[in-house]
Image 1 (spheres, rainbow, N blue to C red):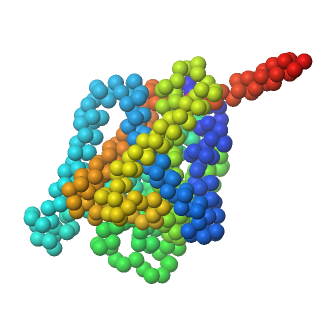
Image 2: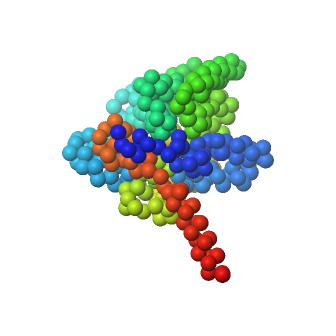
Image 3: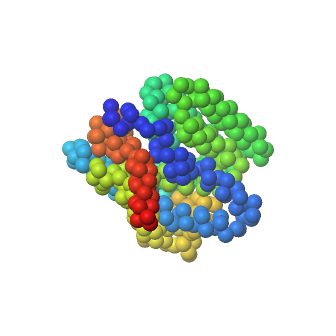
Amino acid sequence: MIPVISDPRSSWLESPRWDFVWILNGLWLLPLILLSLAVGQSSFFLWASSGAMLLTLWGGHILSPIVTAWSSAPLRQSMMTHPTKYLWMPLLVLVASVLAAMLGLHWSKTWLPSSIGQHFDFHILLVYTFLVWNTWHFCGQHFGVLSIYRIRAQEFSAQVRRLDRWFCVVQICVLLPIAWYTQSQRLGPLFQYLPVPPSGATLARTVALVSGLLSVAVLVAESQRNTRSWPRLAYLLTIGLQPVLATVSYPLFNMALFTASHWIIALALSGRILTGLSSRAQVRHPRRWWRFHGIMAAFAAASVCMYAVFWHPWLIGEGKYLFTEAFLREPVIAVAHASATLPGALLAGLYFGITFVHFLYDRYVYAFRRPAIREGIAPHLFAPLLDKPRRRRTALSNQRERASAIH
C-alpha cells in the first residue's frame, strides 16, 4: 500500500473547490448551459463555450495518457520490458486504422456486390468499433474516478468495487445507448439494422425511470456507509443523470456530462501526475500549483494544433472548420462518410487510429493493480498540489514581516 494513498488528507482528491472545477465539472457545466439555453439557443455563451471546449480540450485529452505513460520512469521501464503490449500493439492499431480507411475507398466497389459490401464498408466498421470502444472507455473513466474517491475514503471492500463497476456498466453501456436510440442519436449506421424508434415517449420515460431508481438506490447505499464520501456521492449523481438527460436533449447531455466533462477529467488527472513527475519532492506551493496550470496550457496548445489537422474541412466534409456544431451533430460519423478522397481517408484513419491508441494507453496508465502504476503513477495522482498548512503559515509570516516593516 502506498503511504500517500493509505493516509489521505480528506475524501477529496485535492480540495472541494479543485474537485468541483476539474472532476465534478458536470455540476457547474450543466447549470451554465441550462442558463445559456434559457437566454436562447444561439446565445453567445453556448457558441463560445462549445467551440472553446472542442478547440482546447479534445486534442490534449487524446495525448494526455500517452504523454503520462512515457513520462513515468517505472512505467516506461515496464513498457520497454513488454514491447509487444505497449509498443507494437498500439502501433498495429494505428496502422490498421489507417489501412482500413484507405481500403474503404475501393472495397465495396471491387470486392463485393454493392448490396453486400455496403454493410462491410471499412469506414463504417471503424465507426462501429469507435461506438463500442468509446462507450466502454467512458464507462472505464467513471469507474476509475469512483475508485479514486473510494481509495481516498479508505473504502477497500471488494463488494463496493463490484457495485461501482456494475453501476457504471448498466448506466453507461446499457441504459445510455437505449437513451441514444430513443432520440435517434449517436448510433449512426446501426439505425439501418434497428427498428424505427417509437414516436411515443414510453421507452424514453422507462429509461429515465430505471436510471433514476438505480441511482437513488446506489446513492442511499453510499450515504449509509461509515466511509461515505461526498465527492463520490456527487460523482455517482453525475453518472446517474446521463441516461436521463440523453432522453431529453442529446446536445445538452453530450456537452455537459459526457464529452466535455470526460475531456476535462482526463486532462486534470494527467496534469496532476505530470506535475508530480516533473517536480522535486520538496517543491510545493506555489511552484507545483503553477506547474499544473502550465501543463494544462501546454495540452490546450497541443489541442489547438490537432484541431487544425483532424478537424480540417477535408476530413469533416463541411467546407469549413466545425466549431459550435461539434456538440450538435455526429462528427465521427461525418468523418467516415467524408473520407471518399485519399487525403480524407488518410486523415480519417489517423483520427480513429490515434483515438484507439488513446483508449489503450488510458487503460495502461490507470490500472492501479499493476506494481509499475502503483510505484510510478499513483503517488503523483494522490499527492497534493497545495501544501495548505505551509501556505497559511507563509501568508501569516508575510503579514508579520509587512507589519514589522511598517513599524
